[in-house]
Image: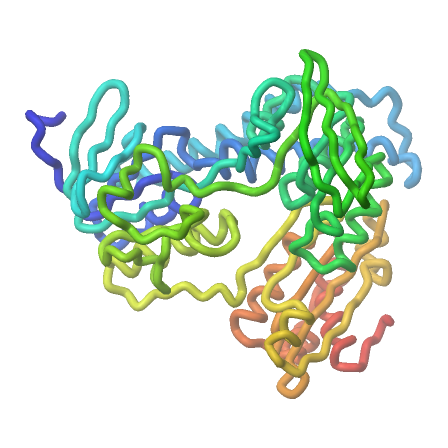
Length: 469
């Protein structure tokens, strides 16, 4: 309870309870700080509630449905397989509820105070937190801003009706017959391919010359090939110009190769990036934190803003909008507040896309390394030559590629496309982080038969003495 309008005192105020904020709050509490975390939405932020987790639940369901459709190829016949999408959504909701409940339990265990509402800076040392019932003020010694991001809304394609952001696309009550996706990046590729596996006719319109432009072309070519198997139509190098919608469908006009085309579908999903949540009622203008024109907060190597005791992490600072990046930065900021010498180091920051097949990368690509003037050597090992991959059935397209320093053999980066790439990349991330060599990977005994052997075999390819290729 607040007596009058006096301010309460707290060591560290955390604004935002996503994967950056709640991790920062827990780490700060572990280090002896009294912590208040504020968020108007459910604990876990976009990632747990409207992004990473719900999308992966739906992707998993779509994959299992697809497997049953082709089980006859390995001698299993499944007849009359149907999708009850309402139950799929219930499954997704159950996963989300379990995880958000877990976050709440962790915060409580670490004695972090939780306020469901919004926060607004009054000055550099004070903020008001508020909801419909109360509006106490807090004096803080330090603050970590972790307010995340939201989907970018294009003027020509305003959200509403048949035009969806990723948030609405994850909540559809039934499988649409058709869907247009503007933007073939991480989110557009994942959700577009997921719905296509459920039977939706999907059309992707991408401005770059390929889907997933953040990954190497030899990776995305394999993903595109698989997308087309489920009927996804991809228009790369295309520019969407406008949309008209009725109560039943939406028509998009776009230009590709100098030719104007139109496509009509039940829904239009717009996934062209995310915008940092640094505007609105947060009151950053009241404290003059330095930001770019795009609303990105400028920070140093510890997440410290232009105001020394105020930190920022996650989607609102420079770099890719990745949940694991936010969590990492949250721990660094909490430790910096405690006086520890922690600093961010993005050298081994992995990037993963849960398409089919999965794509994952860490460290430098071959072109990036050469662009830095490094003398490198690289090599690939294909999934098709791995016993475990073949025994899984289905497509074995894909590879593990390792990039290393030509003189020292130190691993500089890796790119993986294929089943379980999201898990395999962890070993390569450790290799980059600890400056492991190709010999370290090649001499590490990997259990047989496993997909992990592909990492060992790829290292042997680069060393020039492969056994199975």
